[in-house]
Length: 264
Image (cartoon, rainbow, N blue to C red; front, top):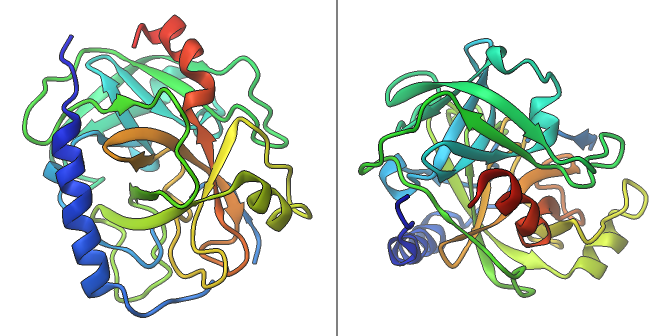
């Protein structure tokens, strides 16, 4: 078992924040409930800076994001693994492109959270058990899991291959966006006519402006705070829509379950 290195991810966040300040001046706005989330208002990044990021493939096509939490385990969203037949899934690690490069690893089993509710996305977590352990290297590393949920307004880093909502920005290459954490009460009020926001969820985004968010194709991917995995992309009302922060599954809330199933 190799202990993930948190400091390198902190340096990555610092670098990304600089890029964000320099490059993300314009805001875009996106009106439907989106379950399978791509990065809107973000920028292209390299897998070496996000070595925990994976592409969960279904029938050999990119389906969702996910995070390496150990050599044999990926954490993703339960709604990404609606079909429990593990043979239809694969995981691409170590590549900035979801369709090529790196290593494509088979899936041995899918462990959805026992309390997952597909109607309201409570406990939207799946642990994907790999058919073989991945080899850690420059573009393949596990990420530390949080023990406590992040504070309001802390900056988070979301990455994935989801819908960019732009004809000029490709979703073939990994992208990322920096978004602040949003108070759960404020988030619940914003989404009260959509779905309830519970303790198994956390929120992030620019509530008033919108313009930066996860979107279709990003679901299951990581929300990282201070180099640790704090959330899993779960659901939201449209993508980057003003007034509606994105909703993520709360990793801290299910730490005991992750330890029990994956020993991580």
